Length: 384
Image (cartoon, rainbow, N blue to C red):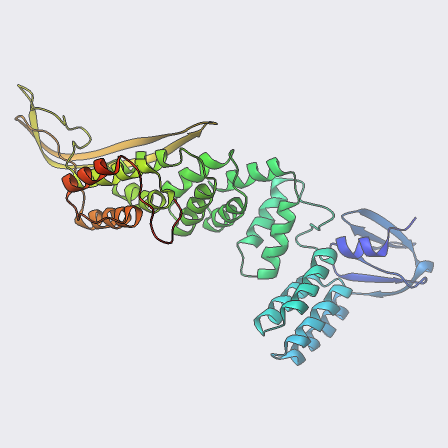
């Protein structure tokens, strides 16, 4: 019993084509036997007798023709489109993706690219996976995720569609796991896909990544995804980050706080203009007997735990402290130092958020905020 030629062409693992005596053409991996050939595809193995075979086109034959076509295509988009179609007809899937990218680079029309894209999505195979056979395990998904992060736009689009075709919760769990990968490309690709459809389940890890990931692009995409959730308590973890002694974490919280437009953000930003006790400081009246520490103390956030409940977002930074110096008997309160450059960042966010400007005068800001009754004024061109 024969499998349909269309299905086999769509799911073939390698570009070798068998032309049968009935006129049909089948693509796949071929192994010669005493009685004929065995054609292997993701749909299974098909044994074909010699008597049923009219002709076999091997990969080297197909590639020779394709290479000649590439040499003649030059910078003509229509030639690359035709070459991509020819590659698909003969099971040359990698070459079909390459030709699509070249056609796009040389200015092929949107309509022609759309038509070819539909053919790719219906007839191509990428890393052993096809639209009719979504990736079954994380190993296959990781190959596709690498394609999403790669330079080929057509492969990235194809891989994205294949990843989305899986069971949603399984795909989301996989992407969240890869968000903690040591490979920047994987994290970027996972962040991009999660940002396209953020869920309540993924919100905590998105917030965490937007604050502690080492890569700017990952932080930007996960922040965008977190903001798109519209959770009413989204300001809480970013305000918690702002209250830490880690300057890097504070810098990463400002863009989110400005975008959230939550009245609670105003108090947090004004506080950046006010002195406060540092980590380890008393923050109050000097005790009867204490000590003064001359040296350096640096607090940093080792991790950032975010828990998302139906009605609230809870954030807990995990703090580490490094210190060195000399300790003397004295009575002194700690002081939290905010760089002038950071104050300007906080001031800019506060100006854009409120439409007011009192410089870094915390008292003036507090008085104005009290007159506002804790309500953000409408800003021209922005929704509240």
